[in-house]
Length: 127
Image 1 (spheres, one colour):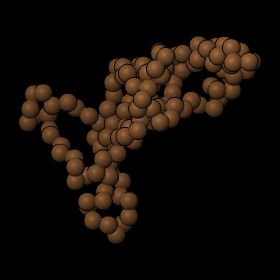
Image 2: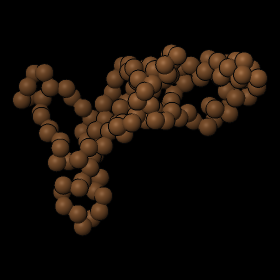
Image 3: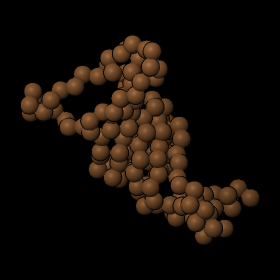
């Protein structure tokens, strides 16, 4: 029984290689990209990655590209106000960055998601 479950998991994992997935980390970051590798410690490698994270506006220190030659360019943040009657300190914003590849430590993973259509197609091929 256990060997059959392991074989099923192995076949399923092989079929979703190259498919888009979204990973949520324990610090709240979300990384979406194409799944290309996993190891026995559940470390995952994604390619063509978009990382999103929420940060407090008060914690964000924006540097323009002209102020330093080593400044990394990120997508302009979008602001979210948690409550219209709150002060600026409670505003959060989404910061996105694009990465060619990312290694996600398995110990930091909270959730891994795949589109339901891809899941259904893959599950049908495995069973």
